[in-house]
Image (cartoon, rainbow, N blue to C red; front, top):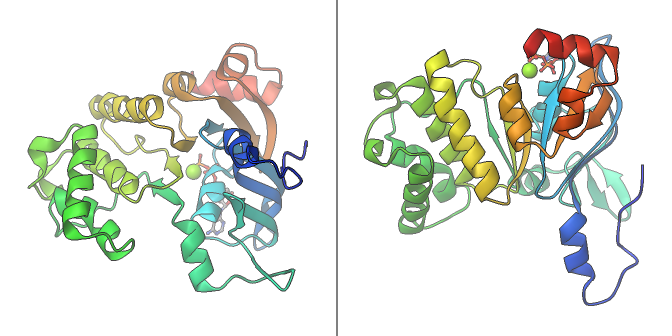
Length: 274
Ligand SMILES: Nc1ncnc2c1ncn2[C@@H]1O[C@H](COP(=O)(O)OP(=O)(O)OP(=O)(O)O)[C@@H](O)[C@H]1O
Ligand SMILES: [Mg+2]
């Protein structure tokens, strides 16, 4: 894989050059095992800043594991993960890579937001407070600032008229849209979406996908998406990666992967979901 690091560039423009084509997420030779089972095997994986990358592949191929590693819900047995140029899995001390301290992990993880299949809103808080809570308590925003940000995001996900409701008073699709607003309120650099519509009743799926399509097209946020909604993936993705048994077996533009897949495993998988 080409080394795109620009450490040697020292002109005034170099920071800008880096920002344009830089890697926001970088896995180097990451291995994740559960007991004897190797789920990710020496995985190299990159997501460039601003890109929308979709992971597809059969059940058990390791897609969620990648997202859980990024959320530091799991730790790899081998390899390194970097986010925005900083180690997530390690900390550099005296030129050596060591186990990271909690503070370091918290700082790097702030760059990452995730929406899960099951949205897990705070049931005892109204919509507005669900979205304000973390910016106030984790980022230290003032209540006024957090409220302004939350209202903008609730509007973005089309729920302004529901600001004062509790999660139990909303449909699953509406709750998931609140969860999306809540993740965005932390201003993450990369948004991770793991099958965010798969727990919803079919008639609620389109509304959530419309909101995500809007966010993908109208913001510059980097997205890492696991979905079985192939037409959505085709619309928003810059690249699609096909996983099988913890390895990327094929990757390319959505046109290439969905219209002219090369690998038999990809063809077989797509025939079950398209
Ligand atoms: N905490 C765990 N303990 C043991 N095994 C696990 C654990 N989490 C995941 N696995 C195993 O790791 C493999 C990859 O799981 P992962 O959840 O990443 O798959 P996936 O590609 O997201 O699948 P799906 O499409 O079904 O969500 C599976 O074989 C799974 O059983
Ligand atoms: Mg999964």
